[in-house]
Image (tube, rainbow, N blue to C red):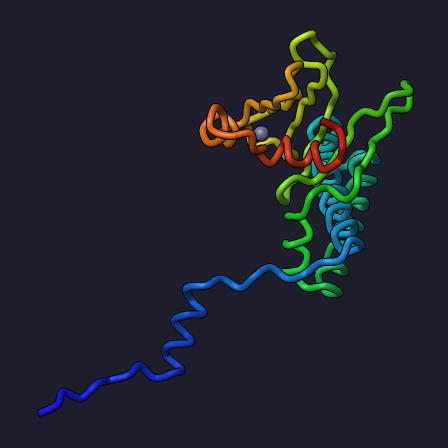
Length: 193
Ligand SMILES: [Zn+2]
């Protein structure tokens, strides 16, 4: 007597396949990447400004109120972007290589206080370090807000190779290949390496 063969129903099969294969990230335009990254940086800076003002001057000082309004504006702008493009597009845009740079001025000096870019969804403050004979290009990168594992130092060495002191480079890349960690990749995309 033949054994009946049971085929999985097409519906169950397609559901399992959908679970196993994550949806590809949505396609994003350059403008969406630029707006999302800029919005993210402005929001992060506004939060840090308010926290610093409250700590130094107290919550009711005029400066604290100024930064509180700036943060409310930044949140409103971010919410508008989310409504316009959707969260999936914004998250995909934040994962793209840096498309825009935010420069924070320092009134008493010519050089900027900080240069900000977005790397893998997070704002980073960058500062070029003095060159050395071994490393003609060195950048210091601090994630904002600082989770306590940085700052990182990403550099181009005199022999043309690259190096970073982050965990990704140290444990996954060093000595194995000439691939770049996310910090080096972002600097490379900007042509700053
Ligand atoms: Zn790195």
